[in-house]
Length: 187
Image 1: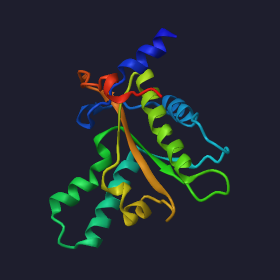
Image 2 (image 1 turned 90 degrees about the vertical axis):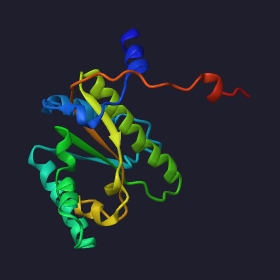
Image 3 (image 1 turned 45 degrees about the vertical axis):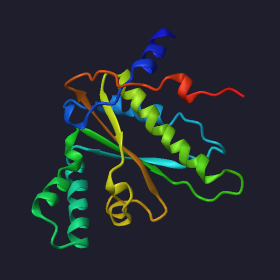
Image 4 (image 1 turned 90 degrees about the horizontal axis):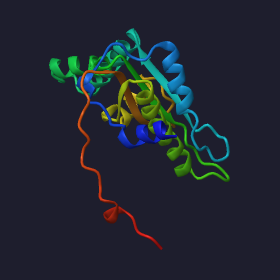
């Protein structure tokens, strides 16, 4: 499958500032999410879920984060609040990949978390295969309990990443990749 190998060998994250409309259509987004869900999942636990931020949902989610900041520090500068309100407007579609990893009799939590991370990678690959630009970032809302609650997460859920998707206005040159002799050992 040379096309698949070429995609895997050349996929590159886009910069958020380069992602514009159109974003993935409804059908394309369903394809991306379906492929994202085809990851290793020891025990078939589905220890993750997806929160799709699109259309006006992006602005509502950003406004919720701005309120979290304002509640935590009423002296937060207006510019910072404005930036937070626009956080998810930086790309046409944003998907939060949410880990529901929990103690299990047989399946380590770490394996459950890695399954969610694999969802992020599959999402990036599927978006690229469909011709969209995408990038995986976390930023402060992934690590703030109040921000997660404002986005509708349960107390035991964590954000593994936000996948920003749209049409890339420019293709980035490849970045330096590690020399295999520096990262591969054989036993």
